[in-house]
Image (cartoon, rainbow, N blue to C red; front, side, top):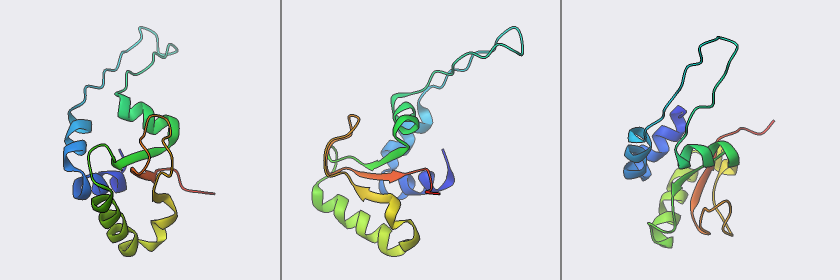
Amino acid sequence: MDGLTHLLLTKYNPGKLQELLQAPVATTKGESPQVRRPIAKSAPEALQELTEMVVVMSSNDYSESAIFKALREFNLSNPELMSRSFTLPISQHGIPAGSWVFVTQEED
């Protein structure tokens, strides 16, 4: 988890941060250095890797007004990140519509 994602979750969704930090991540070692085995990931990590988005506040857990207030506060404080911080207009990859997401990959 990168520093910005950690900061966002610490401030706006500490329960989710604790869930991600406590989620078991199993790694396996191969007998040979040439053999690579997959690393088991939790559902949020897999979703983040697939969509390159982190759910900061889910509309399943927070009201629309609470999400909007926190999103607005963050975007006003960090205008350079505003294009990567938004609410989803529709449900996507199992993330409910209205959830605040942060795109982790910077645009080229």
